[in-house]
Length: 203
Image (cartoon, rainbow, N blue to C red; front, side, top):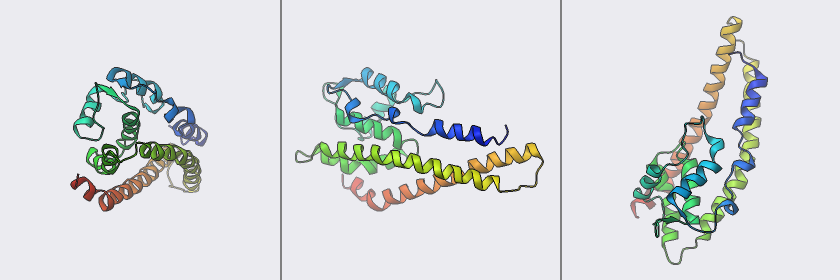
């Protein structure tokens, strides 16, 4: 495959998540949902994140495992409330990069607040709403950064023949993307290790 800048820009546009792909709080039903309704809801709303048609967004087994790992609130009458739906959305995004142990550590303070009678269930909604707002800004930054990477690579002469040069440039593109992702993942892990591990142990 050739280093086709136009095609790469199109792929970048496909990756950039549109507003329609996000689950807004207003999208979550006001009534509590049974498991089958929960999985159908996420399958429909987050289908844009699938790499291929066979991918599953959230399965019953996954959700049951999250409950066992105590990163969901206790389910009443086998129904999932709005807070659990928000938690499942956050877990879906987090698990693309973080381990379940890290997700557990990160969400523990929020879950403790929700379990506490004095804790406000509005907290999780506020955090989630702000996440969606900030996320849009990050998508614009991603486009800018990706374009800069392409310009940098175009200015690089690998000294290879045309076909090998094109493939080499594609490999460089992937390496730069992965390096950035790794730096951000390590920073997220350091924040969890520094500020959230003790909270989990005190749970």
